[in-house]
Image 1 (spheres, rainbow, N blue to C red):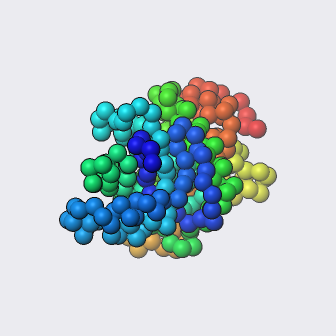
Image 2 (cartoon, rainbow, N blue to C red):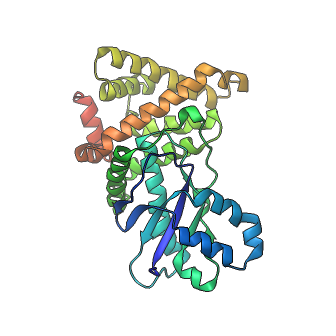
Image 3 (cartoon, helix red, strand yellow):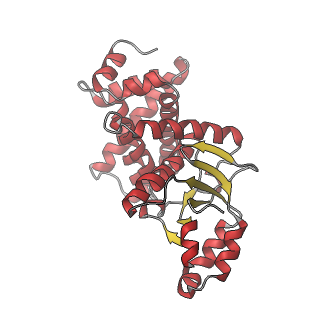
Length: 302
């Protein structure tokens, strides 16, 4: 077995996959190696095994992993490992979430060099934990076509990350989308999702809600009926967020079924927006530049 591999098990990854998939940039989607189960059973760090390892193996041994084959001798620092392995891994999770709603998440990392030291399991950085598991109704079962779409987004985002400052508006949107996605409560989710939409659609002048509704509905709507519905929903979303931030809603108000449904619809609107942008290089460039974005919307939306 190569000495320069890192495995990051994906838990709660509901799928119909059976093969391994090359994702690019040194990453692959592979089955968790059975050998690691055996290695774990024989290593001698009993405290870790008793408190963490058994549960980890139970969750990971039948799971898929992200495998990263890094070049060179290894990582020179924790910061380098986070930059080269962990940040891209989190980016892949975000790519999955842009494709479909899911409960996939990371808990730990597992790298082969430490097998020599008889301590093969390390915890991942905090951003890989603390994710709110979705209900069964919200879980999508991934198929190959979804993985191909996630791969496309993953590679595009890794390419954009090389010039992160230029594309900061795209990554700000993804950051708030991810924060809302991982939030356990409705109010946090609607606030984060609305901020993500504002990054993309907020006008530089004029009435924010009215103009955002117009822009969003024309950008996503396929016909007049859908545009009218999206306009109405945008007003509802913005009003919900405003009432939350101004302290005008009780927990009972927030947790009403129609409010929950509205947040789910907002998530899907944001997902559709991100899918459309990330599939089109011209839209990526346009939404990354405030002046270009304003010219696009003010000049008429196609």
